[in-house]
Amino acid sequence: MNSDQLEGKWKQVKGEVREKWGKLTDDDMHVVAGRREQLIGKVQERYGIAKEEATRQVDSFVKNLNDQPNFKEADDAIGNRSKAHTAGGR
Image (tube, rainbow, N blue to C red; front, side, top):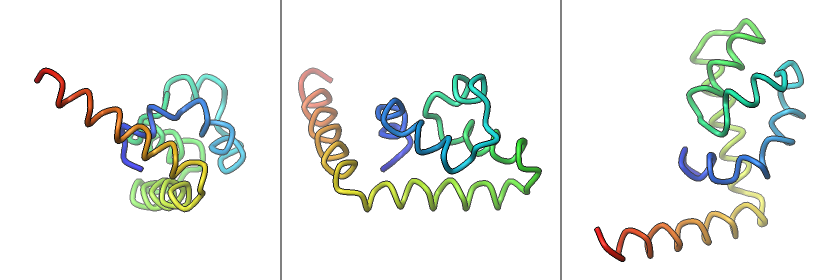
């Protein structure tokens, strides 16, 4: 899952994000809105950890999502839709 796909599936993923990082507020979740860099920043801020550690945690979380079959299928569908979109008129 890349950053664009994280944004596209934010509604599916945000519950799991809240389970993983319970200190994130509703406002934090709204600001993040599926954007990887914002999620890293909020994890870093709320947990008082270095950016490198927050990046490692977020990247590990995203990688683990890729291993879940329901997210893999959604990734494939998003990938196919974006390929069709870019082939259509650009």
